Length: 142
Image (cartoon, rainbow, N blue to C red; front, side):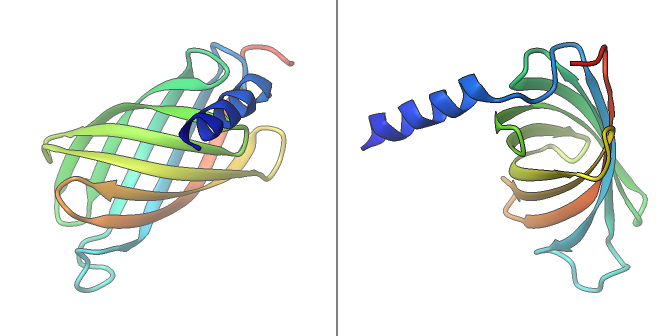
């Protein structure tokens, strides 16, 4: 069964028609829900991120995580788009000294603008659901 799932994942990846290598995406999002929130506006978290497509399926990313309580972290990581609309994200948070892994989904709004939702698990023990917008800067038209 494990090999069947691995084969299916590989076939989805081979056929994906996401961005082309060398495209960029720039985006931002806000955590709508996070397990360590006591009051909604006391500890809001906002993320700004840029991704560079190394291949059609893999990106390298960098960005910032900002909290309303005057905390900030640098986020470095990457994404794996196993299908065009969904990805797995792994990032290290420098400053917060944490690592998170997330599952994300995108929905095109226009040719260059997408809605994005991500569920993140932080190894510190928190869970979060984030929503935001991303802009695709294409190297060239496909």
